[in-house]
Amino acid sequence: MLLGENFFPLLILAFGAGAVIGTASRMIQERNNPTQDLDNQAKQAILRRNILFIVIGSVMTIWASITLLATS
Image (cartoon, rainbow, N blue to C red; front, side, top):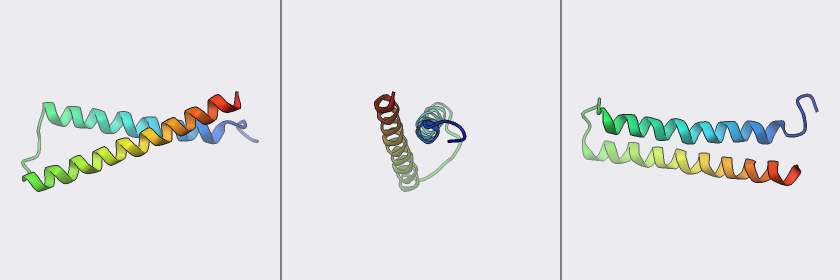
C-alpha cells in the first residue's frame, strides 16, 4: 500500500479525535463567552448536534484505536 497498511485507521483516528476535540473546545469556548443571543429551542438543537458529533467522533476514535492495537 502506498502509505502503509495502517493508513486508513490512522486517518479515521485523526478525524475522530479532531471531531471530539474541536467540538468540545468550541462548546467550552461558547460557554465561557456567549456570543449568540438565541432562544432556548435553538440552544438545545445546537447542544444536541454537538453531543452527536462528540459521540460519533468517540466511536471513530475507539474503533481506530482498537484496529491499530489489533494489527500491531
